[in-house]
Image (cartoon, rainbow, N blue to C red; front, side):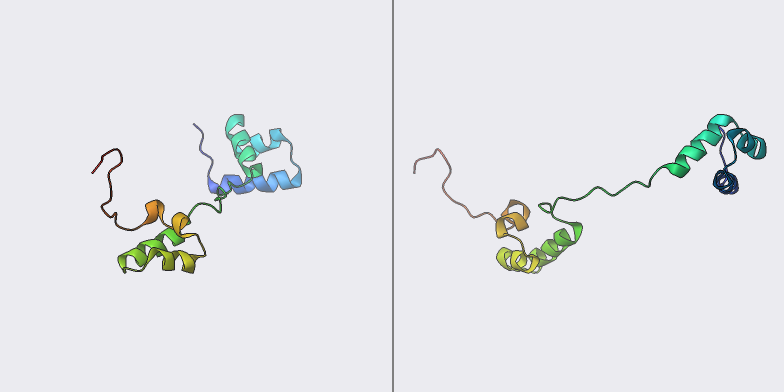
Length: 108
């Protein structure tokens, strides 16, 4: 596979800005037409965007804040209030320790 160097990519961009035809690109760069085409397509390709996070999902910073708050023994409701979130949605699984309670389906 033909690898095009950064200097060659820069020259391709300059030639395209001048309006040079494809045969001139091939003549000056001396690579296969397919390699030059890949470089030209890459120049016009828009950069990849970061996927948009849903506001319902916790950001990494919020997850870190929750983790630090729980490690410090802070109440789940206080952490959620500080983050501006509902307590149930602010911590995955409710966040606290489970307390023993009645077992469903067992009469006691």
